[in-house]
Length: 229
Image 1 (cartoon, rainbow, N blue to C red):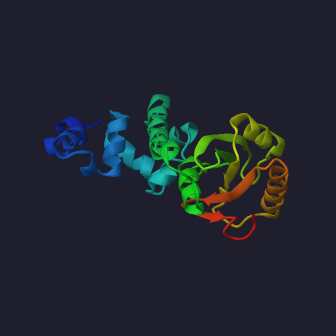
Image 2 (cartoon, rainbow, N blue to C red):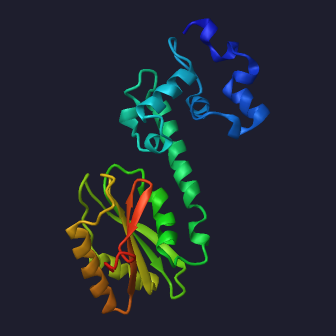
C-alpha cells in the first residue's frame, strides 16, 4: 500500500480509532466503524477502502450488510476468512443486542410486540426460518426457539413438535413467525393452511395460537390482524 495512504499517516482526528476516542462511536460513519473491525489494510488498500467495498457490496445498506455470509465477504480482495468472521460476528452481536430486552418484556400482547421480537431474528436471513414464542397465561415469554429452516421459498413445520414443546414448557399461548426472503409479506396458501391446522390442533389442548407473523425485510404482516388466525 502507498505509504501516504496508510491510516497511520492521516490526521489524527481523521483516523477511525482516534476519532472514536475523541468524539465517541456515534461520530463515526458506517465505513469507519467497519474499518475498525477490519483493523488493517493491504498493500493496495486501507482498512477504510476495504470497509467501503463491503458497504458497496451491500448497496450501502447496513441491513443488507448483515445478510452477507463469509463466502460473499471473501469475494472482496483483502477480506480473508479472519476479517470476514470478524464482520459476521459483529453483525450477529448487533442482532443479539436488539433481542436482549426481549425476555424482559412484561408481555407480548399485540402484533407489534410480536413483530418487534421476530424482526431482529428473521429480517436478515436469505432462507426461510420458522420461530415459535411460548407464552404463559399472562402472555409473558417463557422461551423462543427455531424449529425449522428451508430454502429460498419454503420451510417445513412440525405441528406435533410445537405442541409437545408447549406441554414441556407449560405454555398456554403461542405466537409463531417466519420470514419471506422474497420481501413479500403476503401469506401463501401453505402459510394459511399450516396456521389453520396449528390453531385447531392447539385448541384441542387448550393452547391458544395468538398470531402468525410474517417478516418481510423491515415490514411485517400479522395474520391475526388480517383475520386469518
